[in-house]
Amino acid sequence: MAETNTNLDARLLEIRQDIGEVVAAFDAAGYRLYLVGGSVRDAVMGAPAISNEEVGPDEGDHGDAIVRADYDFTTDALPDEVEELISPLAEAVWLVGKRFGTVSCRIKGFTLEITTHRGDSYHDDSRKPQVTMPTSLHADLMRRDFRINAMAVEFTRDSAMEIIDPFRGLADIDSRIIRTPGTPQDSFSDDPLRMMRAARFAAKLDFDVAPEVRLAMTEMAQRLQIVSRERIRDELDKLMLAPRPSVGLRILVETGLAEQFLPELPALALEQDPVHHHKDVLEHTYSVVDKTRPDLALRLAALFHDVGKPATRKFDVGGASFHNHDKVGSKLTKRRMRELKYSSAMVSSVARLVYLHLRFHTYQAGWTDKAVRRYVVEAGDQLEALNDLTLADCTTRNLNKVRALEDRMVELKDRIAELRAREELEAIRPELDGSQVMEILGIGPSPEVGIAMDFLLNLRLDEGLLGYEEARARLLEFWKSRKDTSS
Image (cartoon, rainbow, N blue to C red; front, side):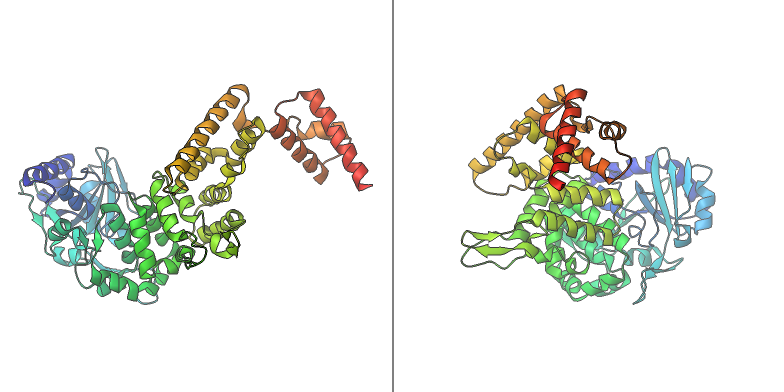
């Protein structure tokens, strides 16, 4: 066991002290209160007492949004009784999950979810579980996703706080393996999203997935289709923020789960060409994702950055080429992320990064003022993420190439700093506004104003600030040449 009993007891005592008033209230009313789920697992493994990750008894499998919990509890008290007990103690109470047995509250700065012992399962054609209450603690633990999350500790004012472990979760933690309390077939039939969750916990904890669990995931992969896109998206997001997302992504691909919601990922396993020996794009993607910092938009961009390659792959004398895969990939990214119900802002950020992920390499001649302005303006608020993605995208083992790229990135950042000192790079816009353009050219509101503004923006990017008179003269010159060309 990673934690000694003394350290584990101290950690559990700390949690009990954090919510002492709640423990006392349930104890006085004659109800049982058990710490469950990730809070127990993390305490056993020596992780911080507050995991701030698990949501509800099976991480929100009731399908409604619930406040994210610091601590999860289960009890034999019914939801109305839970609400009555905690309302006088809480700074805030949320009842959005009450019809599924969960009452959430904030007490002394800690967020708690207290759920009546329950059981639930999915019908074959339903995206919502059927919830039953009350059940026993054993039945409640039995219906949880994995044995490492099916442990409990009873909290009373004077309990010894021994771990209740009917399904040998402690042994699985020692063995660093993920198994289900019952058969994986029953577990995944009850909630197919648990198949994705197995991959996520493997990535988060650096555990293996037991062979029988992998087999069930492979055989039941299509059952993921009954799960809402929103829940799949949320589970993918958690996986992408794990220490090594590639561990979980690899499991999703190998079991066929990725094909159910992200077919672009397994499609990257391009067949190796015996003549040209081009890189395995899927393995490259795994590496890029792992190299990025745990920022969701950045990690998703790393995941999607090469999805345009299968559609653009061509072979010629020089080997395989993927011309325009950045543009094609950006379109595929938008389509897939929208299908997974990502916000418009997140879709825009990730698609932009995919579109621009090769932009750094187009400036081989050096970082002129013109190049720096265009790079910064195109990247917008994703500039730091674009730089990070560019560095992560270099997975060669050639140290000289790696150092050369890093040196060029340092040069770019220095040039950005220099230009920022002289210009407001992030606020670059045409030097003349629309009203001035119409007055100078003698035109009214029309598409022609947009053409003139595009010219002025490119002028600003290429040559910097020119002053009103010079910008006016250049606009008139452009407009005259445009008319001469069209006549």
